[in-house]
Length: 525
Image (cartoon, rainbow, N blue to C red; front, top):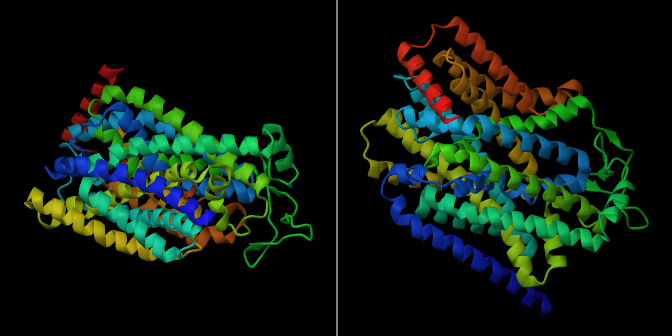
């Protein structure tokens, strides 16, 4: 009876939270329906706080509360920490160098309101080849991204309430779709602000509660060090597994082999997560949507502090979780539930529900961004940009919502696999965006000589190499066992430079526009 009451209290707390999110969606629904500009980019009206929190909350997603702690729980400190360091550096550099120039350039380039629009307008395309390539890659990788969010929701609710994973995943997906369908970009961004607050609160409270429960920081470190390679910067724990399940000793403790090495090549590979930021459409569009580019400095400071606290707390939760509950999860997929278990153990049910709403917050804030971006790639970029250029704004809004539903259905089908590891799904999509868009975004903003042909070569090389490296080259092992983002990013940069230099230099109009944006940047500084 007590268990049922507890679950009802958790559900009640999460329902209150979801109610607040729905209220935000309804509040912005009228403004979202004014035009596709309002629906997709909020009429460029975001303030600095909402810009910062919306960018970070939509970026980090459910993997911050489940995927990253799961990596720390399973492998120990090194893999999770080097990933976090790479992400932190990438976050800072993206805000510092890309944010303001992209805001100014996207507005100057015929008021572009999507990333494919910006790239196409930047090179003054008549035949919309860049537009098509960008839109297709966005469609593919955001569908994968949305699937990772649905996996998160399914794991959360099936663990909490003991109901079949597939049912819970589909129910969560339906809620996210309905919410995004109604509210559009402004609802997504405004609720992301609230969700960013909930996420950092949930992570911080959980890390503190876990540390206290484990007997303090020194006790956590001492216990973690007792596992070979678990608490090392250049070592990695090796769970002894059979058929994917970690084996347990006669004393009930999980078994680990000798510590593995975490060499310099692996460190560089893991740090390369940070390169992905330069190509994340759901982060970049928040830069484009701020009302005044001069407010981006404040946004950067807010975002960087939020990022540092959240990443460190997430890693701490995984380490502490393994110390307190050493044999609670015996597969890598299940280890991503450590946050849920700690919430239920350390807090009264209602407060646990508030804390676990952090997972829901992360998932909603990300998946609505992903779905909106993927839908706009079809409606705004492919349909209006190529198929029917005189399509009315009302038609674009209508089509965006139809495509949103279709993409969600495909993502839900991908997410039906209960054994999906959120971290791995996200890492692939992250590499896809980072390598496809990161290099060309940087070159388009900072190199006047880059050409349309160079842009096409770079995007195709980067996007395709993510698949080639992940599926064909990385399995060879050895020096090839590095995160696919790094080689794909480098090869994309090489392709852009070589093809740009051998092709005809950009028109005077393109070069003049580049210099104009550069002068805006100089005046602001």
